[in-house]
Length: 509
Image (cartoon, rainbow, N blue to C red; front, side, top):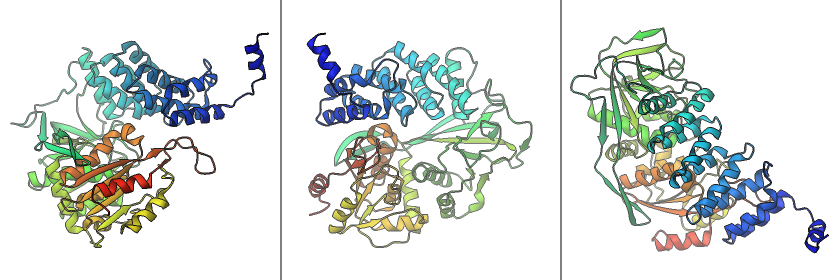
């Protein structure tokens, strides 16, 4: 027996968790390749690396995405191939984006076939593949989504677009009648372009707005043939009666006797505070200003902030609630509005003024929005230290759960400086005056994995003429069990660094 073989035989067996902890320490020192080499004993072909190693592989992939994308792709493939674990759908989507950057058509095709039947992932992946012109792969992913999640209208609409491009469908939008006279099927509503500033520097320029689809004799229903069920996140969409190979209207249909148009906001985010306040409410504001007493269809939502918002517009009768389980309705003219992540800037400002007028001011000029009322989601490990530091500098620490809309807005109405953990509560910052400094503390994973939401906060504060700043925390995906659960979204804020940052920006002395 060779000396090397004898030494290997005597070497102690190292558990996967020990391998993961050692590799995580190496990764924290900035050596991702060495960390991957340390994981090699736990990466047997066809074996289960376990959740600890999977988390380190995800960290290695993040570290190498720019400098060594091939190795990052290798790591993500190992993760996607592992048994189901938390965050697998997000990892598969990250792998898809890297394969698209590398123009690896073979890898993209294989991933499209292997993707789990996860509705949310399949919709995102299908949309991305459509944007890159990969219609066959998009169809593979989206048809998996249809089988898994039922006839979701958004998925079916993308399937129709893919089939149209592949010559399998005559028209993705075939209408029974032409649109209303003088109105094209699609109208793009746009605001003036805005310069976007982050940490005092102009980073880019955006055009904000939304799309309007005009239809005659259309049905308002969800993909299962009934009006939207408020207990589920179902995207509402208008479907013409002969939307080929897609959704057929239910046999029982009520013909609406009123000839005036009905405006339907095509969003499944009526139950999420951020998306409602920043993306949906400004569309309502625009409709109210652009039309005389518009009829607006609102999905029935149990969320109190929805009703609080509608009351701000005075005439509650103009809003028609779409109830769960009701008979489908046919309207003479339906205008479906598709909000963008980049909301209409001028409409957002006008809605912010409307909300500020109804707010109950508290006089707080320095406010920290804490997520201590949501401790299990994205736990900030040293939140108490951060709150103590901010109190020492005159900040009022607030939590927003359970407060009505005007009370939440009132806590921030007079603020000159707002600091907040990333979360929906920061949406209330739009009521603060122009020139207010808004500092968002962000878990580093969130700046990549849910980037559109992060950018939406940037846009909202910029559109309201506030000064947006961001500060990234430190990711703690491997921490001692005595300190925190083994959670990939646990994170910390370096108090000394954030103190220097705030002093540099003139927020504290």
